[in-house]
Image 1 (tube, rainbow, N blue to C red):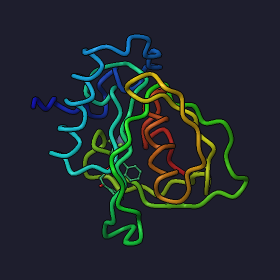
Image 2: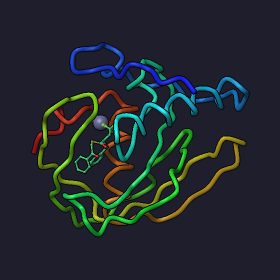
Image 3: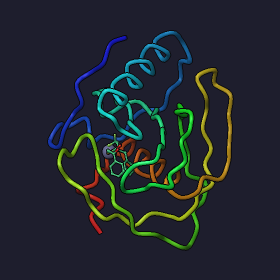
Image 4: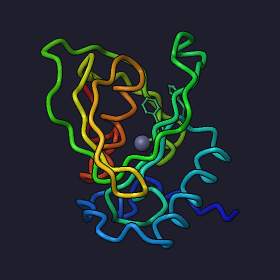
Length: 156
Ligand SMILES: O=C(CSC(=O)[C@H](Cc1ccccc1)CC(F)(F)F)c1ccccc1
Ligand SMILES: [Zn+2]
């Protein structure tokens, strides 16, 4: 399966508002496979389509325990199409984040402790649910990517 080069700071695609996904077709499946392979190769816990140069509203959340979040859940990677943050907790939490598009940086970012999210799967079915902790953090980080916001624009 193909991987793709990851856009880094300065690449205009990172600062655009991505377009909604409308075709749940084989092209979307192929894009998702490339996105997944690229994330795994880069050892990320998430990745958004704009990071491989595709300005579409699609990302992957793939929390796993790591040195910064040792109690992070190990989860099946979740493909989230046209994700929406419905609401977020009033409590915020500072946490260290990295970004495959901002190499070598670890920045302390404030995020909602939990969020209510809605998204579609690859078949176009709508799902919603409450995400907590590190998984909520990754979702918020990836949603920023779909709105052209990187860690640099988010510095606390
Ligand atoms: O695995 C990473 C590498 S950076 C990463 O996986 C980004 C996702 C992310 C890491 C940490 C917090 C939130 C999101 C991926 C990106 F940039 F494509 F979105 C990591 C970095 C800091 C804390 C915990 C894990
Ligand atoms: Zn990122």
